[in-house]
Length: 321
Image (cartoon, rainbow, N blue to C red; front, side, top):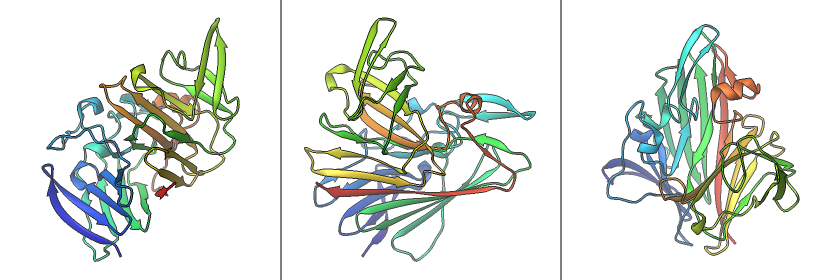
């Protein structure tokens, strides 16, 4: 049986969904951010937490770097901040979108296993609904986004879910991954735009301008590397699946989603290179590249037409291994 309670924690009103297997904590005033997915038997926290006695609430237009930058946020309608002209409309996209700085309204209902949240877009005319449910070892996120305006607009939704880093953790990809594209200059993966062939077991060796890049994509760099990486699985997903294994903790995290709605998969690995922190994020998305303009150039960006609604779900399961 699942229980749903509201309490004050770290300076914010937090809703707790809990059953015999998991505890899930959600903050409506921070864009419906999930700050904890906790496996009770293993005493294992999946999400990255910066710690501290207070959660930092960012305001509209703040940089993501200056904010909490932890847990599970929804990146919508973009990831990268920019202003573009699209079909004679000047459109403003804030850093990591508008949701993470928004205060979401909570719909009152008697369902103990469900939270229903909603918010209206600011710079773009959309209505955003999120329903979070807990069942046994799985927490599910159900989304519906509707264009309520009089013009269509490009948008990216990405699962910005920062998880804990462990030295021996393993990244799990969809089947039949052939290539990875680097989108952030690094010593491990080279220049932005470098393509790495998957040589089997998610290993890649590439020689570009007499510089050899060798990297194992299902592992993470050591803590001593002080690096950060961002890359994409180059092709559309053949399977709506990704996840993590934590051998030391004895936990496997499986993430399942509709590959037709979220056909692209970005990957963020932070081994101390960003703010001196350690976390990872597998990011199913409906846009390829973090920038709206670059995604449009590649014709890999969702255009939300007038009156159109898109609906999709994310299911996060924690199992023991």
